[in-house]
Amino acid sequence: NRNLLITFIYPGCEIYIKSFIDSLNIQKDKNFKVIFFCDKIKIKKNIFSKLNISSVFYELKGSISNIRQKALRKILEIKPKKICFADVDDIMADNRTKVVFKLLDKNNIVFNDLDLCFKNKKIKNYLSKYFKNHQKLNYLDILDSNCIGFSNSAINFNLLSKNRKNIFTSKKIIVYDWFFWSNFLINNKALFTNKTKTKYYISKNSKNQLPPKTDKVSIQHLLEVKKNHYGLMSSRKKIYYTKKILYEKSMKNIINKNRLEFKLDHWWSINLKS
Image (tube, rainbow, N blue to C red; front, side, top):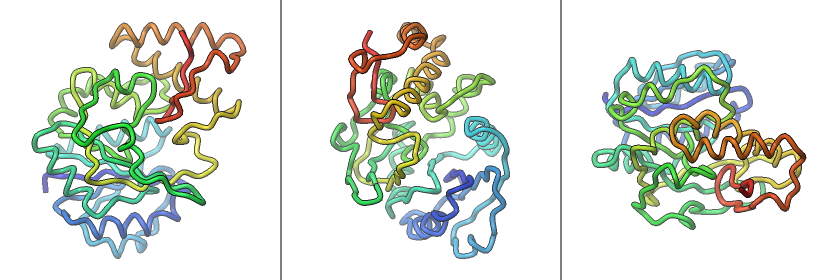
């Protein structure tokens, strides 16, 4: 089997596992293997007895970023053809693997639409408000915020393998997904599809809210994420270095809200004005 679906299980997401397995079982294309990367959690294997797709489990330890990187090293050893990412606390439409694996025949990176699921409301087809079907994005489109996460993305192995030197680092990474996709989109484009989607669940405690929260503590965390991100990317393109300097200088002082631009569309979409 040349295709993989990769997902991560971590403390707190146990309540979503059954729904996630249900969404795997109803996939229209089941021509893939599932790899579960388990973080600091002992899984009761009987939960997975109803999964009707070939699967394997690996236990990993470390920060979220460390685990993502260890998982990617494992994928590089396995050498699949295509890779679909998924988060175990989100639910895939029944045609997600069918659509993304097909689109990867002619595109190296694919990302799909999201339904935002809050406790008391749902916003359907959220990314379709911003992108047309088959629109292509590069690194400038995810420079100030991000819309491609491990919940809604897929990649060809050949591209992953060619870029291995850019996606591993011993430096501290607060948000790995943004770093990962930014590196790829410097020399490649990601194709958006609205023909499938992921139900993205957002609790009031989520640090990576979509759209971002605007209270003081959330804004401070968001700005720390951006300062960290631009520092990590600063050797890749001059624009990242420019933003790194802006965020490092500005964040030495207390930041007033009038110094901020509130786009409030994608992840991390509050910006320091230059």
